[in-house]
Amino acid sequence: MVALIIPQIRISDRLLRKGAALYGFPARKITAIIDQFMTNTGTDVTGVAAAGLDGIALASRMSSEVSNERLAAVAATIMGVTRRVGNELRIGFTEEVIIKANKGLFMVLPAGDQSLLAINLRQDANLGLVRLEARDAARLIGQVLTTVYSPN
Image (cartoon, rainbow, N blue to C red; front, side):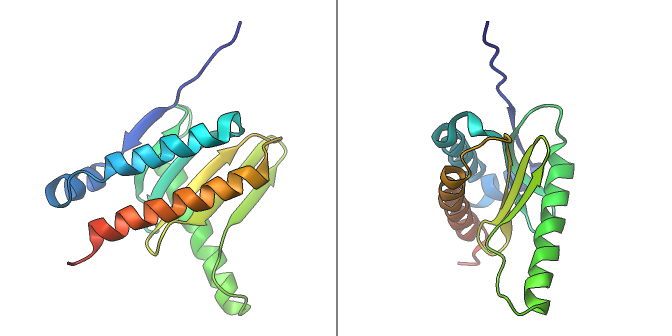
């Protein structure tokens, strides 16, 4: 017997209000990008979240056991620390962070100037494929949010 667990999609009230009021509901676009990313990576990815650098969750596809809000806050902290390390060591801008644990991996990468993409992976995931797809998804999410939050 095969059990399929489909994570819930959660979208923050902040993005819903801003997006629905100003730009035709961009959260749907972010959700569609997350869905396509998960489709393209198969079972290697167990969860994905888009968040602002302020730690506010924008949209996610995570299992119900994972707190969307805590994940967003932790991912933003990780990104902030690695950016500071990059500046202090003069090694440049953080392109991605990968944490390898004994039961899986966690990846965080920027998605434009003000957001990030956080990804949970299985231990034996095809990291090369996930990294390629993650960069594309992060770029697209960054473009959506640039359109939403641009003053023009």
